[in-house]
Image 1 (spheres, rainbow, N blue to C red):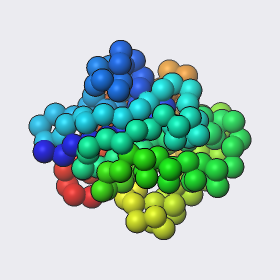
Image 2: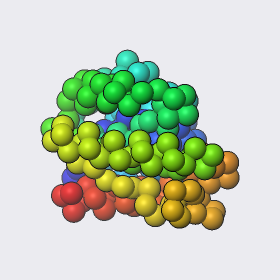
Image 3: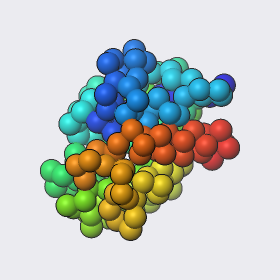
Image 4: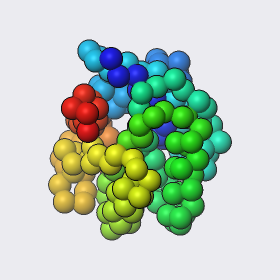
Amino acid sequence: MVALAVVGDSISEADSRDFSAGRLGDASWVSHAVGDGVRFAGGWAVSGAVTAQMARGARPVEADVLVIVAGTNDVSRGLPFTTCAANLRSIAGTVGAPRVVVSSIPPIDFEADLVTGYNEQLQALAAESGWDFVDAMAGIRTGDRFADGMSSDGVHPTVRAAESIGAAIRSYLLSGG
């Protein structure tokens, strides 16, 4: 059984009634990642949060792995990646899981180039930090934008997209990365 901690923003929280307590909604990818072999151990996710807020909100979690899906709001606000990277390192240090997996962020249809660059930087950060990187968003995009039916607003994944993201992360965790 893999004990999973998660830190993120609305992509993770979505329609959850109480994310930290594990009352997950169908639009949260986490609800589709947990099940046989994967248990939600806790975490922090709040809609609209930037990585600095995530770093302040993160707490230690007894977990085997921490999955971070973070940066959509940083990109939208034009925050420098160096700041985001420092916040992601802080999150990982605070949560304290022995394994860290950083996921790509989903498209932002009206800022597609920024997301592509951010995801490339995330992948490099993961490599230099000894973390895993998973492109969990590959199944929900066409090129650098959301695929049909995967977002209603060009920013937030639909339930169908959350299922795809959750399945990708679950598969990655259970395969050992």
